[in-house]
Image (cartoon, rainbow, N blue to C red; front, top):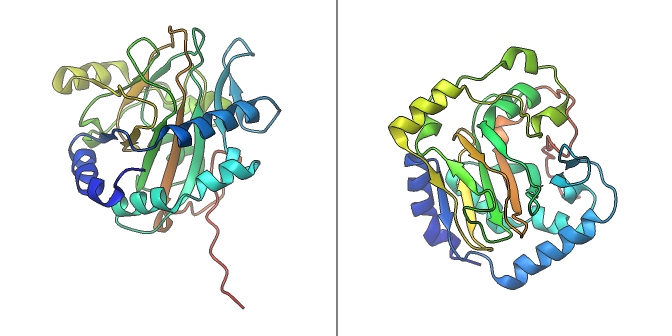
Length: 263
């Protein structure tokens, strides 16, 4: 594992200025191999929170595996990553969401332009964007396999969305499909790209990718002969816990559980 403390000042500066940061070589091959092996095992049986592509066969995403599997429960309890999130946000945090975006070889579909916070605000009732995404590259990421694409600095913009009003009461599965709810307005995206350009999250398996919930991002289809998986842990500040339970499944909207005092 990389030097978390040394990385934090650089991470904080990059996230403040650009909205994202890549820490190369953070996890070793043994850790990544264990993750991929357990993802294969988990995918072989039925679980809540698993999303398929439009063909109904290809895996698109796995959500909340820590709720149903001991191995992923240990990953979710990683104190080092929690500590990094708390250092970045400057306050105590809890795990709001755990997902694995699959992007399978030759068939993994695109993710349209979007930012993450709008879903947590509208669907989970989270008031402020006091969250951070910490992602682990589980496979090498290159231009052929649909890497994440960011608009640097777009987390500082006020975003507008296409057809947002009619999307508010839609099924949660529409928040995860290639026909994504709350897609960013195309003219706004065009203006942001003209002003700020784009950067692709190219890296190796084991790299750590940290990004703001407000940054505009997308990814293309995976046209390569290899999978491109990404594990994402989203941490929310404890001060920012939803005031009201809006009813989304726990594999999408994690519950903050207050530690019980020892008797």
